[in-house]
Image 1: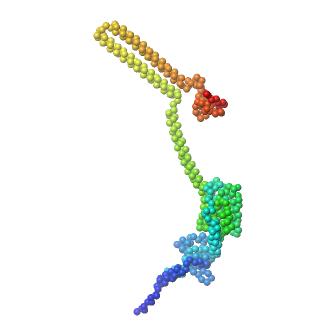
Image 2: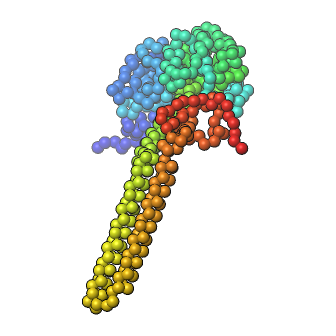
Image 3: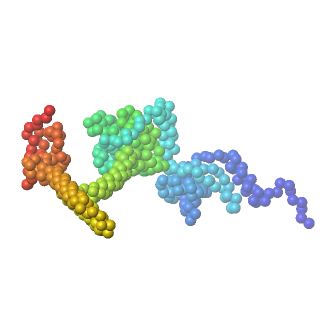
Length: 448
């Protein structure tokens, strides 16, 4: 028989779970310093190591999502400070730290100094959005405050050449890290401010590449922050990478995630205008092409409708000849009908044998009158035909030119009907019955 089990008997799992809960409830996030040892990177991306000092060590785990945010490479022997929560890994009963944030040892003092300065400057209003200036949409010139050897300078100039190649750039050189760098950066801002009118400077870019907090510390110093706040020009801060935040970012009129992004912000107006100009150029070309096609078709249509005066006269002559032919045919038909009627009447009279003497004499008189009327009508028609032909001939441009007149056109080929269409020195084209001539207006006289 087994003895009765006590009521407070725990399984290993229960014990580990209770210890874990107690640790998590009683120990919030805390900072621990030590040296990294036994560093291991799992295939999952999680990082495992021990944090030790001269007399003890503790196991640590940093999961992939947190480990990916570290801007530097972890290695054994590094002195670090970690912000972590205490827990117990139940499966093995291992006491461990689950790391949320890690930094190099000694950076805590820099972070504290950063936080104190940020709070003080914020209370003074240096970060107030109301004091920040808008970036010019179309700057005349861009100033860059950076080191001539900085990779950030190359990134900015390359971006500006691509997006706004016409835009002049002036470099105001200054060291981007090291002893006294903040003062020299502030002096470069002051120099740019003094020369803004002469250089036609509209915006400044404060730029450098990424780095550790020590590398970027010049941009966290008060002297630079106050120089930026006093600068009359809008300043774009393009310091570090997207995850790097400095006091300069808070004071700047516009913060860019990278130096390249700063160049994009400074040239945004010109870049957008260039895109719009390209679109308008395409639309204008299409519109002009459509207009040309329409005008070309209109010219072709008018060319088909345009008739030379000689052709018009020839057509009128043909029409008159046709009318004359139809008139002669009608007269001949009427004469034939009259002769036929006479012949029928003669036959009827012959059969009835009337006294033909008076009728014959009447017939002769009628024939004479008919002949006279025919001749008279034919003469009238011929005279009318001659009159119409003479009128057509007199209306012909060639006939008008032959009488000593000329056709005057201006430089655009328009007929000149009034001296008020002309100006002194205007070139003229003269056409005569035989030949052409060029002339220039030397005197103008307006008719009454």
